[in-house]
Amino acid sequence: MPGTRLARLAVLSVCAHSLLFAADARADTPDPYYRLIYDYEVASFCGLVKLHVHEAFRAKRKAVEADSELSRDALTRIRVGAMADAEREYMNRGLGGHKPWCRSDGVAGVERILAE
Image (tube, rainbow, N blue to C red; front, top):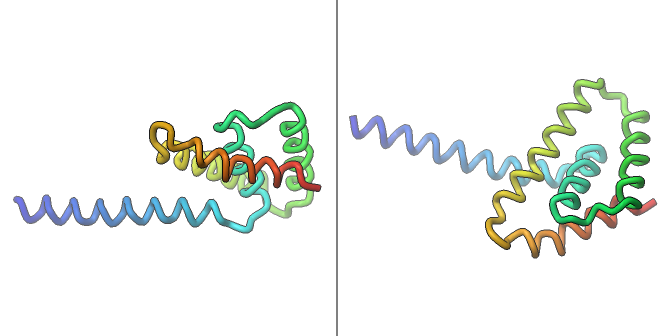
């Protein structure tokens, strides 16, 4: 059934394309908890997490979680999603492609984590 196989490939292609754009959209989400976790993960992939960055992250994460009206399960889903999105983005960069990403997104993430 060549027609069926071609139709399945077309559907899979559209689905994969949609997932890639959905991941990019989530990375730009205004949710402060998502952004904090995503920034930390990117900085971690880039080797930019030093003790002062980790301590600032821990303090901010604790404060955001305490101030949030979301359930523990909702916070976990956001955290896991942000971590998965950062890993996916890192993997999409290919060999050496992560270096410019680290200089831009990684450094910007650390600056946001350290900002008061």
